[in-house]
Length: 401
Image (cartoon, rainbow, N blue to C red; front, top):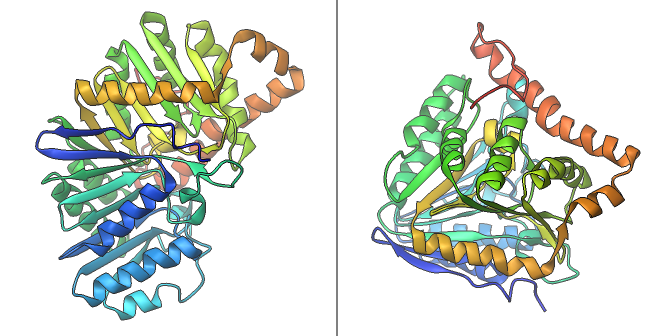
């Protein structure tokens, strides 16, 4: 029995594009391998984690076969997230004619900056994005197995070409000698869409708000109903306050993780619960498996992609989300969120009071401080400060309303 079987996988036709939600691990892996296996002209892949396990070998071998039949193959991985890859793993792929590079291969002050994206583009016509990395665990969703409950989105249509150009621009930046932050910011800003029912929204290390943070701010500040499924939930105070305001003026339903690979992330999320519960939010922890989804439904708008609702994803990591504005699709994804509730533990004030003694409250607060202030401040200091000498460090709770 898998915990993904009860969940519907919505489809939609939006602005001339076919949209498919993929939930079950087998379906998500099959879609990725089909995308690679049927590519005719070009393939562009960018993944935070790429492991040399059976899934990693399947994907690599499929890419080798594509390159051998004449497809132009580009594979980009994050140097931090994929640091466990053995030397020579990609050599057969390079030998087949593919281009393989790492994001931020130079260590030093850029080492704390991460490219958290997970995307594959075929023939400038199909895009597969979501939270899943290239690793066995991200496609194993059977109860009792060490897998992740995740979500991918397949977008087919001309809009995919824009993401192809973005990957090429980002790859060009990776190959520059200096890898300046302002150049990276220019790539991310130029690749973000500001109009239309389908938009690519990019996140990254900006001096002020990046395009993803700005889009979320605008949409959440006007939303009356917000449903979220978030694997990692540790927003800074201003983005936490945004959700509390949604709960006060309308309805907020938040599903977070009861299981994870790092219990500190759950502690940080639980530190936020009290503030949201006081505003009237409904909070649930998903129990059957480790949660890895990144989904936001705000009124008629849906966000799906690589970004968590935490300080690093919102402000620092290089991220990609697709923003879809369509009332029918938003309602389908809102129902998708509701389908998770029977498998969740509902959090209320009584439960929070019962489990949060003084020591645990302190541990939750320290975890939240670690994610929203310490990691945030150090990474910004090392990655933005030196490029902007007049820039002054601001705490993670600075006012961005």
